[in-house]
Amino acid sequence: MAIWNPWHGCHKISPGCRNCYVYRRDGTFGKDSSIVSRTGAFDLPLKRKRQKEYKLTAEDNPVYTCMTSDFFIEEADGWRPEIWKMIRERKDLHFEIITKRIHRFMDCIPPDWGDGYENVTICSTCEDQERADKRLPVLLSAPIRHREIIHEPMLGEIHIEKYLASGKIEHVTCGGESGENARLLEYAWVLSVREQCVSAGVPFYFKQTGALFRKDGKIYHIPRKDQISQARKAGINFLPQEGLEELFQRLSKSSFRSGFHLKEEDREYVREKGMETIERHARDFIAKRLAPAEIPNDGKQTPMKGHPVFLAQHATGTCCRGCLKKWHRIQPGTELTKEQQDYVVRVLMEWIRREMEKK
Image (cartoon, rainbow, N blue to C red):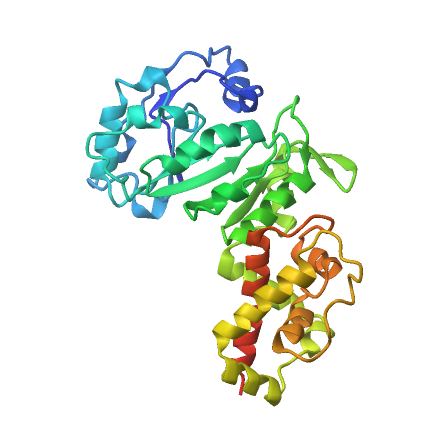
């Protein structure tokens, strides 16, 4: 990872900017962060070592760009064409651009942008629901090859299901706020976004707790040096395939869950019907027995035998809403979304596929 700051300084434009770390750090040196100016690192991608090699190489990827300003800030309009030229030239580098000014995107792209540069990721920050609903439609409609979302500092519960459903978002990050006046990060907000990402099969990363962190009703004051490590210890980062691997690893440690297997008659049924039919059965069972917000016989709605999907549900902790909360962090009391139902079916079919491959 590398950081490239071609200019420095910014203007606060939304609630997430209130305790900006750049302003806080510059303030200790008596520097005015609202003044935007080019830096000595302006042409960093083109700078070379004495041996004529580039200072930045592919080993430095990704290159986080404009971390002490905003790439699309107005004062940089005259400099940005030079930056795009360098980005075009260094196709071996991948540039990550995080912005609160996605509304200016179309006014700031180069003439040859087309559908986007393959070596550029545009990440829109959305600290609350209002910003998400304003910025993400722009992010999705703009011609961009790689799109990400970051909720940092996360200032409330945020729902992005409909944006994730587009299939265009490649990654989501959540994080708290640091500094003396840091605002609270509620762990439940983070888990909610993680759940949305898991349901949509989108990678999720919990970056840091922030200084003021609430979990299970208790508020923690976390030193700056521990905020990233504490987030890592939560163990909730998610990569779609790795997420399933982690899930099956956890399930394998449960003597009850790992005790379920397809019998030969079940395998024969799957072979006879085909996986597509079994998946249709799974979707129907989940929609009727697991998806409702209120289930009168919750905990007893899934038989222990009679269909391969029933066995898969018990084996994967998707047999009732209580187990769904314990094993998959999907909260009870609300109807499962389409994305959540899709996720459950994906888990079930993966278990059945693995069982069918056993000899």
